[in-house]
Image (cartoon, each protein chain N blue to C red):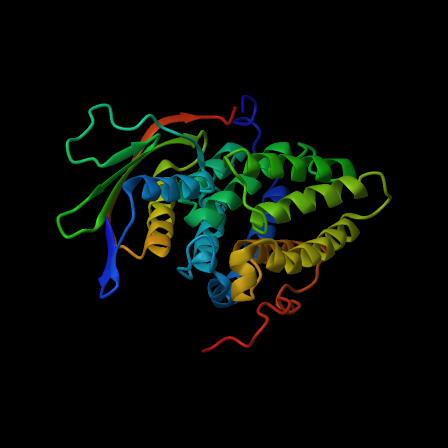
Length: 231
Length: 114
């Protein structure tokens, strides 16, 4: 982490872009919060995954805003620390590791090609997996693993960033659906994993923001439950 | 520890079994990369200590756990400890049906996964 401190988001357009992406993810999470909470049966069925993810991403947005208003540049390390300090719940802590890995591996020039995207997601995956003794399948960890693999497969293709992100979203949708069978707890409850669903929500929002599409017209979050929820 | 009593007889679970359940759920706790060595001074009322898990029971027959863990470097220790507490007490209550009255989480070390 040696050279990160100096490595700020230099230009105002870079800062604006990072903020726009973070804000898109936050808004999408806030909209889906209750549905994500409703999926939360693992590791502890306390229905707070959606809220935890919202609080964690909000910390990121606030850090960016604070840096902007105080006239200081937000360094990558500041962002990582804000996420670390204010990550909530298991899924929030894992998400903070995912973002930290990606931010640390992001190229300084700001241009993200196939190779850079693959490196970023591989770092995300490694950071996420590095903090658990026995990773459980069918979780947000499984999803980031699939995303890293997809980015690696796309690496040598000639695609635009929009197309790459679209491919990642599609891969994530399939992977999310599969979590239903990967964990006995989820299978029994007939739901997909809450944390993984949250990561897909973020990814989709970011993909739409990058493509310049309004985030609000987001596709529905899959069939999240096998049976209609009892509400 | 007594689980239930009815006309057919009584049902017991050993502290060792409880420690084993706790240990297994610790393995899957995000942020936990190892178990600590447990309390240095073995407390008189500790029924069973198994690696990082110490099981004792309160006078009301409720479970008390002390967990000694090693947490991954670079994570928010307080947040990880909080999730460890809720995860382990949930698992132990789910498996045994007994109430977990207290969970103490002791962070013995912070390190990167080997």
